[in-house]
Image 1 (cartoon, rainbow, N blue to C red):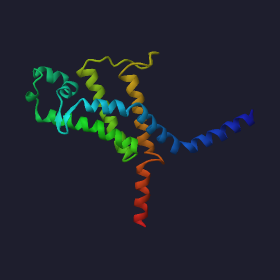
Image 2 (spheres, rainbow, N blue to C red; image 1 turned 60 degrees about the vertical axis):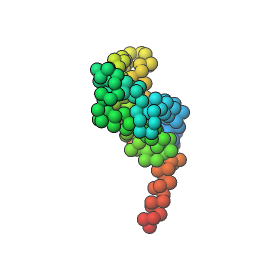
Image 3 (cartoon, rainbow, N blue to C red; image 1 turned 30 degrees about the vertical axis):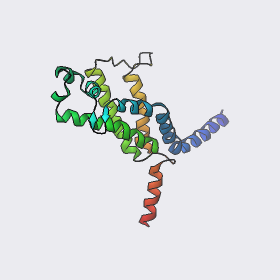
Image 4 (tube, rainbow, N blue to C red; image 1 turned 120 degrees about the vertical axis):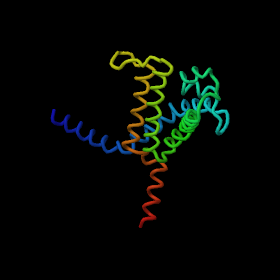
Amino acid sequence: MNLLLSLLDRIGAWVDRQADWLLPSAARLVFAGVLIGYFWASASTKLDGLFTPSLGAYAQIFPKAFEAAGYDVAAMGLWQRLVVLVGAWSEFVLPLLIVLGLFTRLAALGMSGFVIVQSLTDIFGHDVAAGAWFDRASDALILDQRALWMLLFLVLIVKGGGPLSLDRVLRGRLSRLAT
């Protein structure tokens, strides 16, 4: 029994040593394979031009306010326009930064905030059922799905971009310049 426990301890120690490169690399790979397309497709529906929000963007981000304005874009204020533009560009830029591993922690923190706002908008603005945790069903669009997304972001916030990232390249260049 002691031999088995010793073997498990050695394997566990080896796995622990791999965490610093494996977790962030895997998180970025999973994000690239599963979520970047989702966010870029979503962002592309929000812009009719570089700085021109689409009609659908207001409906997605400010559903009740846009309905109350009679779906008239001119009735929406500068604040709503800025939020739509920042939201759309965030959906393009932040995922790209994560995949490249550039400013990874900051990009993952930004994506966390984005997903929180997105989820609250879905629940309270679009009246989408949030679902529930600990209910045997793993397919609730909001709580279950987005909790997994947040776990990816948490790994990146805590561990950074990993060894195969532009963060690592920049860190190496900055340290050489400092010496």
